[in-house]
Image (cartoon, rainbow over the protein chains, first blue to last red):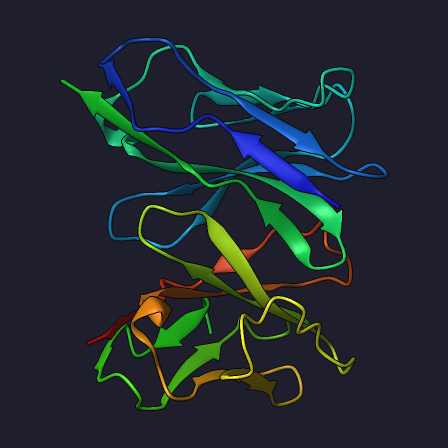
Length: 111
Length: 115
C-alpha cells in the first residue's frame, strides 16, 4: 500500500538558514504529492502540491520537486523566518482512502 | 460555509462516556474525511465518505467508533464508551472532487480529552 516517510523532528534552525525536510514515498500508479502545514493553533492547510514527475510545487518561498526516480518530494526554502515555525506534513494522493500522510516534522526557527 | 467547521473545539469527558463530534464541510464538497492526530503523531485515517457511496470504514480503530453523514452535508463521529487512549485531536477535511488526488480543506479539529 501507499506510505510516506519524512524526517523526524524537531528541526531547529536559525533565521535565514537553508531548510530541507526530506520526504520519500511508496506508491502504485502516479499519485499527486502534497506538503501541508499546521501553524500553532491552526488547522492544516495546503502549502504546495505537484501532480506529476518533475513538477515543482512552490508557495511562500517553499519549493518541492516530484522526483519519481528517487521517489522523493523534499521540501526546501532558501531563507527561513520565525513565522515559518510550524509542523509540516508530506502527503501522497491517489490511494483508496484519500491522502496518506507522513508523521509530520516540527520546525522551530529561532531569531 | 466559507470553511470546514468542527464542533466542539474542545471536549473533556470521563472514561466510559459517549461523545459525538460534528463536522460541517464546505458546501458542495462531495468527499469528507475524518482523521485522528495523537500528540506528537501523524495523521491517522479513520473514515472516508464520497458522495452517496458506502463509506470506507477501514480506518476505524474499534467498533466503539462510528460515523454518519447526511447526504453531502454534516457528518458526526461518535465514540462510545470512551477510553483514555481515545484522547487526541479529531480532524475533519473535505474536498470538492471525486478523486483522492484532490486538495483537502481541514477544519480546526476537536481536542478530545478523556479523563
